[in-house]
Image (tube, rainbow, N blue to C red; front, side, top):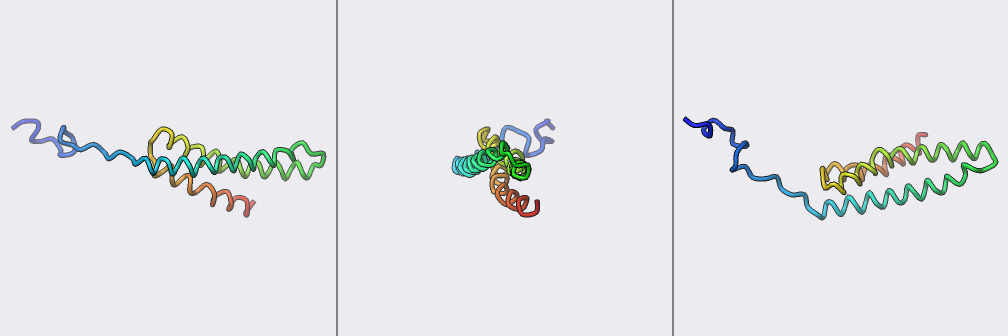
Length: 111
């Protein structure tokens, strides 16, 4: 008997390549995550103006709002954009992009 007879079906030249991710999914992740990134950057820039306010309470509120906005941006939106740009794990990138807004809202409500 030859080695080919004992080889598993998935390990050989007859194995079909994995299906390529669809460009529609990649574009969808790029659009959603890009829009969220722009929104969060705008939100951060608005609250960053209050960091230089003369009042201590205004500075503290602005600092808390910036931290709350930065967490979903750094943990969900930027990895989703990176995965979509590299064309890897697009389903995971879509999940990250779709979870960013609810996570941000929940963090804002319970902060």
